Image (cartoon, rainbow, N blue to C red; front, side, top):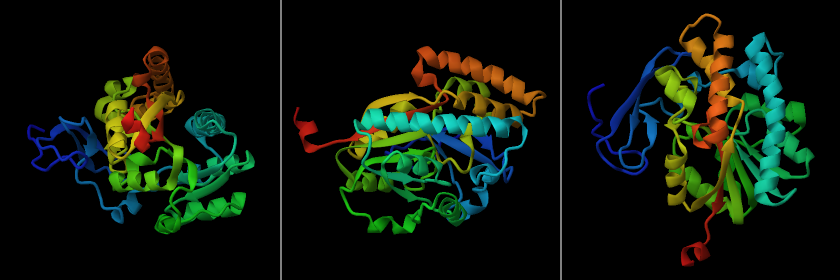
Length: 305
């Protein structure tokens, strides 16, 4: 990859995009994709991904896990155990950062509804958005929680929500600019936007290079770090107030990355390197495998002082 992309950055419009990595879809297609990096805003993105409609055939990653089937293997059991813990952690983040124990919450990309269901049980009024029919049906049957399709978002009223959440969803967005603008409209004054994303500058990302599982091409279109995501959000009226680690992601992602490398004892090797990455993140939060970002909706008064 000794060329520069002649097209402008899809985020800031700058020219002279620089090749960053060449990654493979190890999960579905075995196709290769080039990642580009913008020299101006620092955004790393997947070049020439499938269209939103074409992406459906790439998007069945871990469907059994997402639909709540019985876990199999060490990685599956680890996934379930960690998910239960992380649901409670996410709820604590919302309560602490929103300064409230209830209110209206929009969960965008709600998957099968485990988080939405838990927040409803804690007294929140939850609206869930999910594009896939199978996952909406699972939520309805499992939790009696009706989700809306992405196409129904236009019916939501401005200034409706105290909190909007996206848990490992924003990196999939085909039009992040339009989505952030819509979230700004939907939030009430003082509302918060909470997003969890993999961190392209993490210790494990640097170690595994193009084999890093959280690149997950072509499903992940954007590969954020704290600086690039903060710049993007600020352009759409959001101020970064807080970010913190998702501590278990380094283990899970490292295990999957070892599998991409076809190493023997991938589970043990991944756990060991995940522990190393986790240790680094204790003192260097910006090196965490994944981060939760809390943005506040910027008001006109923020510009005046």
